[in-house]
Amino acid sequence: MSLPKQIQRSEEAIVVEPMGASADAAVIWLHGLGADGNDFLGILPELELAADHRIRFIFPNAPVQPVTINGGMQMPFWYDIRSLDFLADFDQQGVNQSVAQISALLEKQIASGIASQRIILAGFSQGGLIALHCGLGYKSSLAGVMALSTYCPNSEQFTQHHNMPILMMHGDQDPVIPLAVAEASKAALLAKGYEIEWHQYAMQHQVCAEQVAEISRWLNQCLPIQ
Image 1: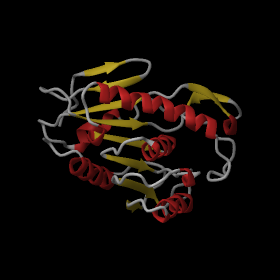
Image 2: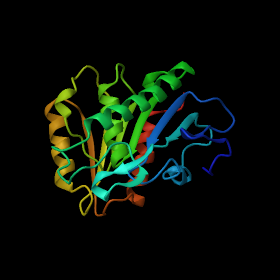
Image 3: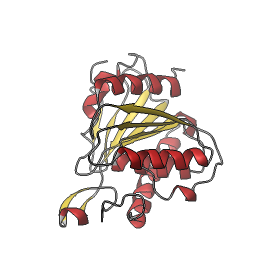
């Protein structure tokens, strides 16, 4: 699949419409710390989706704010990082604000005629945490949540009120979010009854080619052409 030309850019997000037909599904894909909506735009051709897919891809932009752990440097982020104690010291207020922002995007897609069961939340690093918190706390079941190189603090707040596919992927050499942190998050979610598809790769804080192939398979499985 070549990169579609129906790209709309705004301060809020980059939106890529499917070729030749109106969208009947959506993937909201969140970037990591210091990046923006362009970060995963280039992955679309690598997903090798069918030419007649009807998926709208939305790449939101996080607001630019000072990051505590980076000495107050201004950069896009979904929540502040105050320390390296990822699971115990996290910015719950910032997470809540970003979850509200992404929930509004979800509602916008539903208002446009896309069923919640045809929407995937995806994210890398910080974006993955927001995707998990937003998806697990949302009022309706989604098509799935994809969490790349991330973690899930405060998982006790979620209740098992609906089942949906959760894909978690992590590098075993990740120097930013250690594998043990991700594994602890996975264990906590499994203990609450969530079903998780887990993939581990010989990589650092990144996305590798083998992983992209699995992402493509999973997207096609969760959002089959109708």
